[in-house]
Length: 178
Image (cartoon, rainbow, N blue to C red; front, side):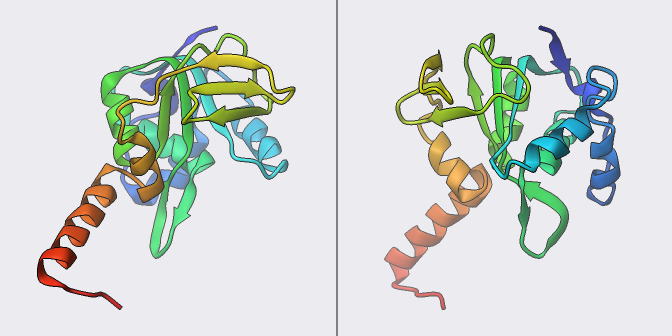
């Protein structure tokens, strides 16, 4: 097990550099990391990023962008940017956790010692459990903050707040949007 630092992902870049930037992700810790991710994608299952200690060091925005480039989903009409993805870590640095939340990822702090590259797992966010593909419990967690599931569904904290604000405006002013 090892600590995954943001500098293992890369340095700050602008969004037009994200595809190239993401190729350098984990190049020092896991030389064939990009190839491994591509092979896992062939299973057509969501991919979770798992590490003992995740998000220390600098450049948290750049790091979460690289994670999402490989494991997230395209955002319609926004080139070179993705949202979503799942990050599991025994410890996730607070600023990285917040940046993941903001950008629509699902960061979960849990024991990851029973997980290894290539494992298929089942995450039950409302039960606070992670199961092996044999349905055996391998980790437990508390989904915090309590708004995390809504933030993930909305594509991040900012879109969630925008939806709440829009709904509030609609109810106050009886506005409908087509």
